[in-house]
Amino acid sequence: MGSGPDLPELVRRARKGEPLAVSRLISLVDTDRGGRHDRLREVAAALAPHTGHAHVVGLTGPPGVGKSTTTSALVAALRKQNRTVGVLAVDPSSPFSGGALLGDRVRMSEHATDDGVFIRSMATRGHLGGLAWATPQALRVLDAAGFDVVLVETVGVGQSEIDVVALADTTVVMLAPGMGDGIQAAKAGILEIGDLFVVNKADRDGAAQTVRDLRHMLSLGREDGNPEDPGAGGGWRPAVVRTVASRGDGVDQLVAELDRHRTWIDEHGVRERRRRDRAAAEIEAIALERVRVRFGDLRGRGALPDLAARVAGRELDPYAAADELEQAAGAALR
Image (cartoon, rainbow, N blue to C red; front, top):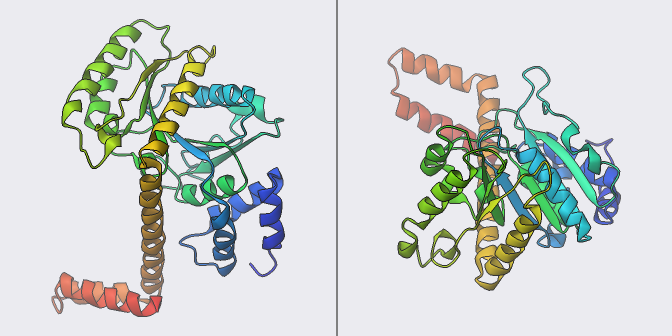
């Protein structure tokens, strides 16, 4: 890292919105694991005072619902309102290079020449939850760079891959008609996380039924919402928006609902609470990643294989071995 870029200058240029500087900073945080490099910690320290402005919108849902098309349509609608937009599009990883399979995000290429838009694909690199490990750090870069709205598009998610709710100010759950048990899968997992719901491809048969099913399930238990968490049902009632994103139909209504939710979370203190939760989750993730890396170092030095041999040889029970490994990792962290 010693021959790397001049970070203070890079941060200064990124704060002015220079795309190359923003891209280089995201590349730096994307290659870090657990904040081990002093220069990357310097980036986080330099950017932190300049964050907190952007409205972070997460878009998630099963594969095939049109998340990329909807993201692109949202960018166009927001730009018509003269709002700057950053996009973090999380893609599956290539099994060969580890990079994002969709790379330059060709489906959003129409915005490539717009100075008010920055689009970056990020590879999951095996990280579960629908996001890349470095997504929170990349989000900080875009926030500090002054983008009004940051759209975070997850990979196609199932019932347990809902990390986006810990990252976004507003979470949009997308579904489409004709997807078989899509509603049932959502009911068992991602349905609970939505602040807004979008039924895309609403020109297809079954769209009206999908909307009715969603509204019915959203109505269940609303009177028993947790008063300590207004976003969980004690005040906010998620809208269900019908869109045909490929034509731009319904996208203006979606933008209006995003703004309505932003106003609501500001008025009820929900945004601040969510951002505290996000900070706590990020701190925990960095600390755990550092521990994981240290355990890997211990594996390389033979500590774990030695302990495994002693357990296999019945000289030590696995809990006692785990205690020894934990002590060794703690010493390494110090």
